[in-house]
Length: 605
Image (tube, one colour):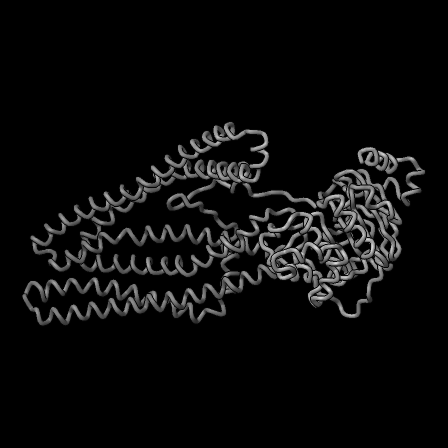
């Protein structure tokens, strides 16, 4: 199988480059925003009444805030200046009531929208996971695992945060902007014109600053990816570093990479950091200019004092809704891009893993008929493979690394589909079988055993979920795993975490073999199953595997010739072709490639 690492930056770091938004946040734009929005709306359909209620609460909250602030005008003109303190108390109570209603609406809106967004994300994540379980092995081999993980975590979180925060903020800011502009016009069209004149200057200045900062943030992301990749590589390779005494050299290299990142980060933060102070200072200048003109208008009797006080408050808030809308639109773009990545994975054709009714049990006669295959088009890995195996026979596949041994197994399990020819089991083309029925009849032990978080017993039972504890322990005894399991702190109930990091490689492999044994399949596949086990342990396991393979059709891939000499058929594969096949004695008498492999390993032993 192939595993191409994609979407990585220098030395395995994250991807970098592209426009930035806010204080250095990367903005990834969707390719089909309209289509993505339509699909998101389908997920939101069930919660539409609650969303409408939430949006009504947003409108109420915004209008209450604007209304309460506007009451300052009559508060000053009609009560404070005339000295009507009795009416002043009533007016203050009205303002408090409006603010309280607005706060209550905001509280209700947050509860409702967060519940809707989390339910939607739960459904999306379940749909994505269920679809992921149907995707072929080829999909996982050609997509970086970290990138796939980010669709479940980062992309989903971005969608949720945008729905519960950005959407509300955009609507609230839009209503606030329209309301502010309307009230400012009502109070004084002249002062409104003075305030609006400064907006193009602010946006032009901010645009130029952010354009310059994007360049430095791209460089910062690139150097950060390089830095993270270097650290990750050094952590993983500490044993090699120590044994070759390369600490001083690597410290110098790290210092150089770290300094490069410092310079890029400094430039980026400087340009992004000066934008806000400049905007704030210009707003203060605009505020002072507006206050001066407003004061003149008030002195000339063209504007009341209460109106001036309210207008000055509005003028300080006037640009905020536009800035918030701009910022949230960037967040929405990132959310739509994340949703598009999620939907792209959902749209990838999956395998039909549903069982079919009436399928006959598999006995184990396997045949390859002129099978050709390549992972990449026009680059064949297997060429015209013909192989016939009868039930109960043991087949060994030998050859140099990259010859195509594992690829044969990948095709038998239908991890990949053949390009031409056919593979049959009991005379039936495996493409006519359901994947469920086919794979339920196969027991597979890979070179690298993956263990799940859970007990040792649960990991063995993963091979057959209805297996009893006694059957799991019998399988462990069969493959000589019982002894080491009983020496663990809690025996079969010992918890396994981190893919079995608390076990040795050989112990993990033993559990993988026990998992296949408890499944009790008619066809057994051992792909370098004993590669990580010492020779003494291998001999013990081989005895158990010999018992396990009795009566089963078995395919064994091994580099150690000593483990396959008892096979019924030994196939020597070179450059994707079976160049020799026969029993151990027949191939030795042939004096060809197998004889050379055998004599070479014997001399080394």
